[in-house]
Image 1: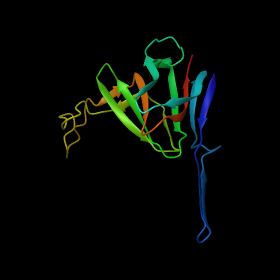
Image 2: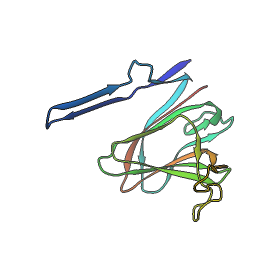
Image 3: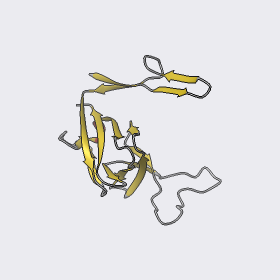
Length: 166
């Protein structure tokens, strides 16, 4: 059984004034360690301006290219390699008819350690599930069964990594 280890390194070097800031979790207790990672799929995809399915999740699914068993999911990361175009990454829950979109700016990455997300079921008006000024935030949970990505302009290369248990 393998372990996926995620470390964060920050470095800021300000020329004016000679200030420098360095921070890393590498090798420390702040690293994120995900146990039972037995397999992964890493690839670079060409993403057009229309939504393109990059992963599908289903309970008990046979592990084949692009389709994964949701119960064995561990981690996924998407990195926009373009210099100026942004990406829209969409998690969809077809069972509950919910979606959430995330923007990935040029040169940035986004990762997920769970397929669960919160989403208002209504897209054209305020939802009764969320009552402003109260703690009423119920029935918003959804579980992604599909990941789609589209670019803001042209075709964009996206580095992907999906890790899972066998």
